[in-house]
Length: 113
Image 1 (cartoon, rainbow, N blue to C red):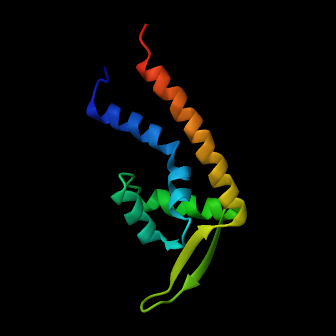
Image 2 (cartoon, rainbow, N blue to C red):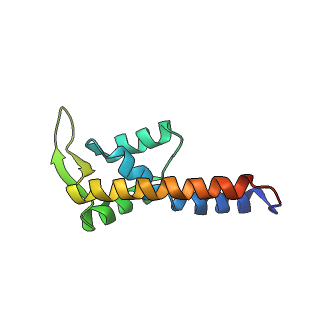
């Protein structure tokens, strides 16, 4: 048993860190700007802080997984991100890896001694 709610919160946060890249890539199959991406993730049960999201977006773009462009549609300019061709392939590979990992974890968590 975990000693405190704070300790449990940290453990849950560590668990979530491992899936953030896949979660972000899953929502960038269509172009989105940072705030809309944060909303989409939060609505699906994966809230993410700005201080985590924006550095992650820059890192993924530097790795060639995302493409971005500035757009000014009826308001202030916004940087829109979407999967690059490489990012689409990586997203598919990570989705497959996630399926395998989830299957293994389900077996581990449900097997009886």
